[in-house]
Image 1 (cartoon, rainbow, N blue to C red):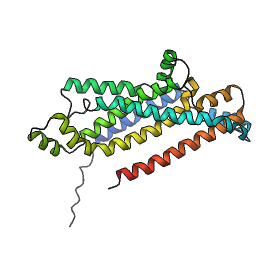
Image 2: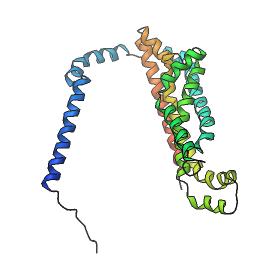
Image 3: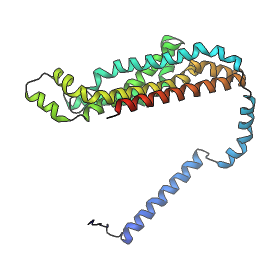
Image 4: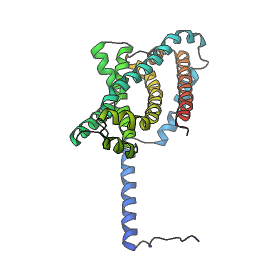
Length: 265
């Protein structure tokens, strides 16, 4: 027989405080909406202009598709190399950023803040910095994706290590195993599936980001998209958008299937 335990009814004071909190939230949201000019009326008035822009893209200029073959491959290469370099940067640091393996609290917090700094800055900002350093081209995009991705993967890798069952770790330490042996034989077998899933997800994210980095001179199909917009070649823009959607949908499907197979019991 099940027993249902009901909480105590709220007092008048609790209802009053809750009502005040909700009212303050509504006031804050209303003020925020006005400060950012949030207006449904403006959207309705601007709808004809959006419709006009989309109509200028039709029909797509499919002849432009032949010019996108090389940029598409460049975008995929950007995503792959950005992910690989992010792994190289994240792997040595993720052990220092895991609470259960870090040698000291200071090292743990410093490493975590490095991860926060790397992933807190958008890839486009990194791309602008690296374009100034190494010039226009895909190399700047790879560097931007790798630094931002290292922050994301480092955090995911460290959290996967922290979630590992501590009993194998303690057992190996009790037998006198070295820290490297503990990592190889007790931590990695448990963390590796999560690492692979996080890497595949990051690869998918990098592919999306790589399609945009071209707008700031970092190569890929984003450069063609931006150029067609600047030249008012909207039919070419439509082809770029369709190709980007196809790339993202394909990457999402492949990544989801691979993650499902890896994480399947």
